[in-house]
Length: 509
Image (cartoon, rainbow, N blue to C red; front, side):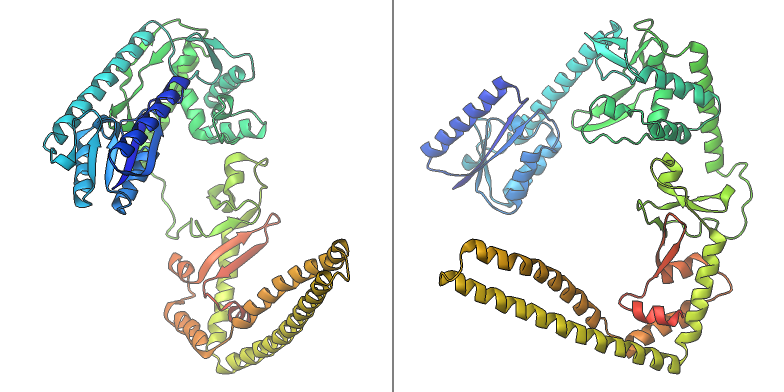
């Protein structure tokens, strides 16, 4: 029987590494003594009460594919510490006819004792909840003593559980954020200024892996809402929903654990209250607007007509509509300023005019059989030209291949040395590489044939869908694939007829 072994240790500390080695040796001996065949060790080196452990998930996937016949583990709690997952696992193993043996003697399905499965799972879940409560109680006690158990807030550093004002630029940035918000700036505007001036983000300060240099409005808001900047400890603001669900819920303000005067404040009580009042006022306005109260009237046409269709040629970001500029700007520039991208804009009216004229020309030309014959003849001539060029390229490729073959024969016959062979073939290899790329490009162009079926498909779509009185979102979705805008505001529109670029280009002329 093929045996899978699941091992989990709580941390990657040295003593736990020793435990891991011991467990592996134990299971290897057990497998040998019981005439089993080791399929694989599945290992997780961290604590966990959920089913999101990598080793465990891999083992479940392999079980679904019947890659082993039996699972060995120290105890059921190593696999599952809640009833729901334990019973799901039990059902999987029964369906796949896979046995489970725990080394504590609690479970051995080869002997049929599966009736205690649910009971043990319940016991382990209660144990996990008890441990969780103990941890929360300990952290609560530390919080009431004014000891900070989480990551130090931006602007501070932590020394022996106490918060100390950092000796870098971050405290000044905190004060600046509060000052600018009171002066009327929004989250994104403040974030943009910090980014443009090159200040480190909170994630960069704490050394978070893959931390972005971009400041975001959400980071600014988090700082503005944090009562730690008053010199008081406010902890217990969030908690996990349960030991089996790592999602967190926000705790009501009146249930925070607050200890006054635990560290030096960065913001005055007056400024903090002013900011909280502004935040609440703007939240109320946003809520009213969302629910249709006091909204300004809008014109009938969709002012965000091109949203999701326009992209920056330089950074790839989508464009945002700006009402005060009556057009679209690069989203990265709009959010982070000139350091992130350039300020290039395209007017909505200009886009509408361009597309309307393109589609008018398309509508006119697609109905003309003579026009089609002209286009077909023109593109057919071009195809002949491409085929001729392709034949020339393939001839050159064959010549280089023959040359290299003869050079290799001379090397084998010892008529030339290896350095001489390398010298005469290196340049040919570079030339051959370029020719192969060109050959592939030309083949694609030859295969992009013009045919009657494709032309009629375009004509049918135009006849059915194109009404040029107004450029609507439906028309854009039907005809426009994407719009790309360069730094100098040059607009390129890509239309949707796959495989028909040449026809479309000709019909637009």
